[in-house]
Image (cartoon, rainbow, N blue to C red; front, side, top):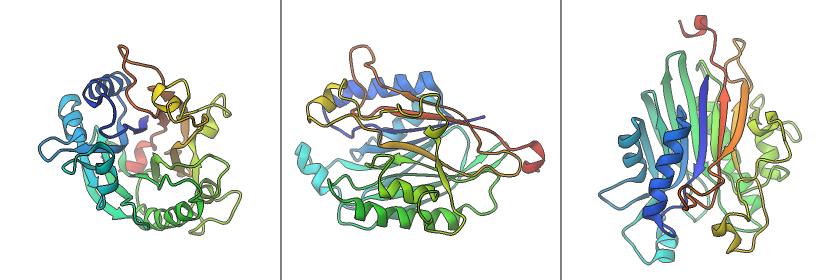
Length: 275
């Protein structure tokens, strides 16, 4: 079983030092095998993903945003970088950062994970958050789908896409990823929302008003963070066996992020598939 987690960790906002420890505790208790993390900070000497990897025993990769200026203005510090990261229990055999279209510096990070049963093509991203920008997110999804199709061939596992997609399940951009309700970008590429396998498929909220960081913005509850998985292989690799929300409560009085995390459990391939 491969335990896959996605989490937007809210960059350097709020009590980021206290939140850093809460983030570490959540990951340390959940012990996912592979994590896709968004809004990772880098101050030039310390990278949050690198620090977590060192403390928790992970390999890691990081893709900085090429345009962090709008973020930096929000905290008044031009020295702090922002980006996406992957933490992996197993070695990362390949990594690649791709800039997505738009002027707000969004990136996708590919990490080919060398698991004991063969390679897992793993992607993490954060789509634009601009209100009303569904068309732009659809364009970014199209870019992601082409990348996933190109980089996933020959792997033991189907592709896994994680991220803060800043879109609700019924939106055009999420439907485009699934390929069930609209034509897929790449023929034959279907990326299933893991939450469809949850016991309560109507829940799974990752943006919750009970979180004071969300309540301050007066926005409604939503599900905007996802683990998407390609169709299982002939050996059953990638079949979703379980999925749940994590980090939806304070840790020792500290909310780790404004987002909750999603943890999905995926089946391994048969041993013969790794030989």
